[in-house]
Figure 1 (cartoon, rainbow, N blue to C red):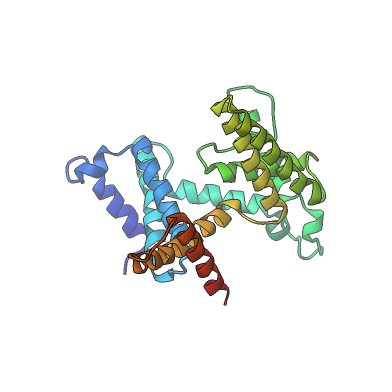
Figure 2 (figure 1 turned 90 degrees about the vertical axis):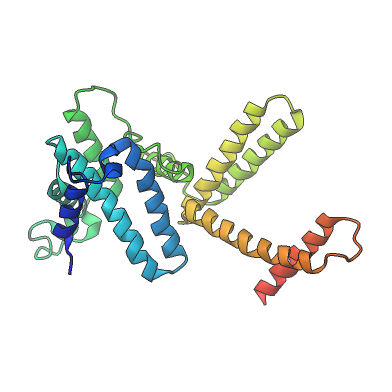
Length: 270
């Protein structure tokens, strides 16, 4: 049976200067990165589909991406796989002081006496900035990963801002903000002056919607993925119903398809 050492050895052989695979040898951090994103989404998709047998394979593909980066670094005398493991272990211990702090259980200390997750990460950002060669003003918004999906970035921005007190404590103003942004978008659409301005207002509306998801303790990215799946499922049924009705007299194909859409929705509720 293979183990982690086997995978590291396989990766090293694939990158061997003379015995390795030409494709693997041609790869760089930049060329591998898109594959990593794709593999992460395939993991999420397997979970969403509850395909746990396939999830095992997808997790392996994602793990291979990590091993690949470690091999690239090791070839440049940089970090290796054990360094990555050390770093994440240190981080998890640091971010869970109520669990790992020495003698915390003996003294009966609970999570309420410990720094919050966000507060600990904020201190990490301060330490990182202190050790950086680039001096800049410290912000709670430092180190946002802008290559993440935009809805995920919106949640991170809102959550970070909330730490400073810039947040509503009730849901009502959050909903009102969505209505306000929708109204502003309608004004720009009706004015027909600037597509760029319409896009800006559309972005504001999406940002406000993601904030509502955050207040409801929902993941907007996952909510939208599920909505996409639901639309696909329902529209496939509409397609089949439409094909079966070919030849029947109709004045408006849209009216017919909307009627089928409502039919499918009712069938799913029953």
